[in-house]
Length: 146
Image 1 (spheres, one colour):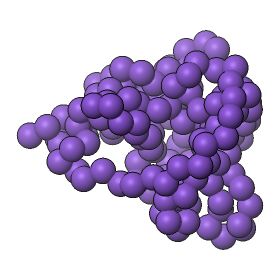
Image 2 (cartoon, one colour):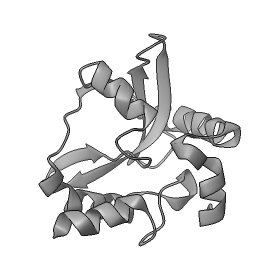
Image 3 (cartoon, helix red, strand yellow):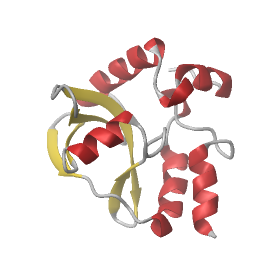
């Protein structure tokens, strides 16, 4: 998949939500990740919608750090999938060739910086991950390190 530039990323995720193009790309990437065709760190996250109750699926990058696995919300704490996960008590399914029931827990702010740095190292820019140094995730990582 070609790399997505910062301008395109802003267009695709303007207002903190994916537009139709980003939604289509996310769907295709989630299908590939579910089937195990994507790199191991790219998985499909399935969560129940808090309003509809329907299962929603989207691609996420699993960042490994200190023998644990972490998910980072590229669009921040108010991302729709994050709100859905909170509403469902952290229950999600991760898929990468097989199905794994997982309960997600939020990480304390003081522990987030190295996890965000690891995410930025791993996240493929073509999947819409923030560019180094210009993203809100990178700014949060720098701020949380202080």
